[in-house]
Length: 142
Image (cartoon, rainbow, N blue to C red; front, side, top):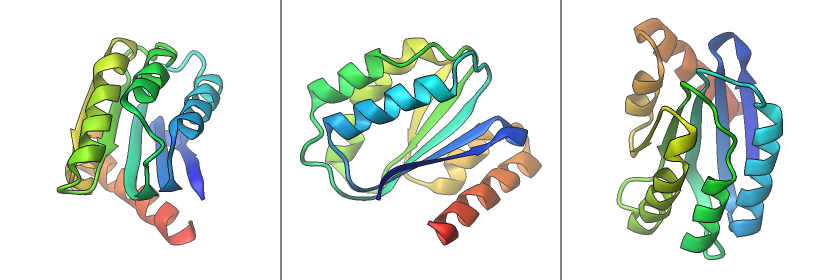
């Protein structure tokens, strides 16, 4: 499936579902398309859900950092990167992305728990619940 994005404009939220195989080229294409889709965006909330990846052998530290460097500036924006618990390799690649993209966003954090990530992204408990519903719906329809 690759990468699928779902926009919940009422919450200024983008859910990015990454599944199956991820490599440097696929990630770069995603970043370029996201740059186009979010031109001029401020206070954006994004969850990059990496729990469904089955292979990321073609994803390198140098490729990941290059993708992070080409991100457009998104003032006031938050990015939560969700990785499976115990996956140290994927956590390390997410950390590399975080380090090189943090100047383009207000804050980037890496999580292993979905609810913790969405509570961090939500302004209050009711918004966090709405974001959880967006994610649940996307996972059911994906």
